[in-house]
Structures are given as structure tokens and as C-alpha cells.
Length: 109
Image (cartoon, rainbow, N blue to C red):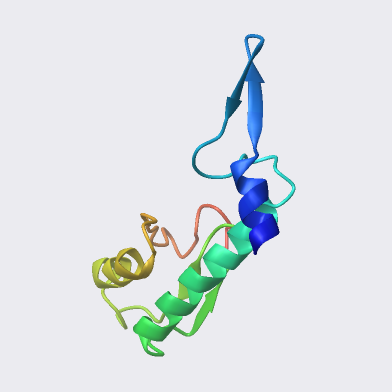
């Protein structure tokens, strides 16, 4: 953990021939970024899954999204969004309802 903290305090960038130390966060291209986002989103996923209390048929996390499958009318979409936002550790979520039985992103029927 000490090595990770040291690494995160040592990230710097060069811009217009000047060097700057990054004070917060992790650069997207940093070697540890993918690992850290997986750890963080894993925690968010567990928080949400615990608080949904089995109302969803399936909650899954492809890369940087969280998706939940529910039966029509089983759960109010706004209520579910509230659970996501309350348990998201600062993340803000949005939702999409199927149109003509399809989700725009996946074209799932």
C-alpha cells in the first residue's frame, strides 16, 4: 500500500515545457488506472447489489458500466436510480429504458 501511495503522489505531466505533479486522481493512461477502477467499481457493485435486495434478476458490470435486469413493472426505474446514486460512492448514474423492447446500446430484445 505504501508503494501505491508513493506512486500516486509521484505522477507528473509535462505541459508547455513545464512539469506538474498531479494532486488528485489517476491519469487514464497510468499503468495502475485499470486496476484501481476495477477495485473501486467492485466496491460500488457490492454496495448496490446489497441494497437492491434481490429485486433485480441480474446485476452485471461490463468494464465501466453497471447494468441491472428487472421484470417490467417489478421496480420503479427512478427508485432504482436513487439506490444506485446513494450507493455509488460519489458516482452519478443515469438509466435507459427499452424502446420497442430494445436497449439502444446493445440492441437486446
